[in-house]
Length: 87
Image 1: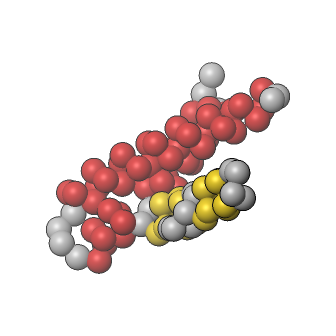
Image 2: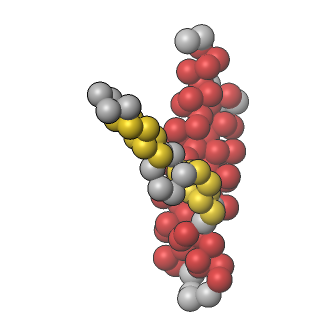
Image 3: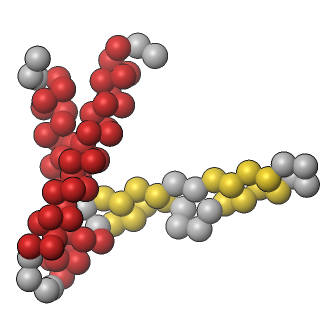
């Protein structure tokens, strides 16, 4: 993998990690209501139930879910700023 591709992977991992932690902290600090639910639950994209391919000899199970909340987007932008602008 080229150096730029590793930076992109690093941005995605750091951003989602930072965003998830910040989203949980902000969600717990908010009073009960729909805004709190948005930060704690977010939006799920992907396969909720795993997809299984059974070939008798081999069984493969696939599943991928992205949980996105407003702080995930902020975390991605923050990580991109630090990786690409700050050296």
